[in-house]
Image (cartoon, rainbow, N blue to C red; front, side, top):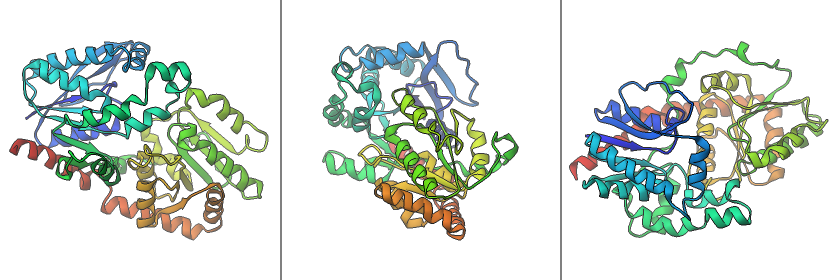
Length: 400
């Protein structure tokens, strides 16, 4: 089978897509990818994969996407390119990433004259998530982007694919409850689990870390934004250190543009500036070293339908690094952390601060929870264990 993968980014930095490609390639399928190639950027060749790139400027791409629900030029471009991609590469099945790419993919299949199956890979609860993004907020932006339209369009778009891939059992169950035309047998759960074999090959090197450890380190990794709970984390840290607890906060990740001023104001106040270290970006190969440097890890997502759709990469990365996780009560991560006793779930700001204090006071519990998380990764939540469902999805397509 020749599988065509459609993804509207530049592929090379998309961990989830690359993991799935490696699984399918390892199962003997030929993989062809259609993605973007942003202007002026060079891309490392990915061995064994045929990659076609649509050359476009990043700002142009963002501009066209912003107007997707008013003037769908973005959709027209993709539909045309997908048609040619299918014909040129004699594609047998189309694996499409993200809800908003469904219509263009269906149109491209139809225009190609083929009747190949469409597999839709949902990285998130997009119909809700888009309403929380800063670029859709404000009267004029909301009027143009029309984020609420996705709630209406979702039903129709989910009726097109032959199979659907989701992040968690919870998100699968939400979709099954919401749409009676979907069946459990057509939905594959593939969470953002780590590639344990690759992670274990990475050497821990604390000398690359530009800080001297003076106190227990509380670590947040990922996009820095209000919706990700970063300000709740800073407030909890401020309260804990204000009570005399010795700790430092390490934050690594890009800051959402709209939250930049608030974030830098928050970490720059005299009471915190000497205790908070911020790094905008690290190569993912350095993450194990920073986890080794840290003591407690945070996943403080604001609870909403988007964050109830699956467990974030960072939670599994924390567990892989043998660190306890303090997390909000988003349903999938709550179930995971409570079942495997690898951290503490909080429900409000008071419980957040109390959770930090509890672990800062109990090093044995901190170590025990970290080890519990690592054992869960070894026994269940790793690529080797979870890839079977994705492989079986394509075996089912061949039978049908």
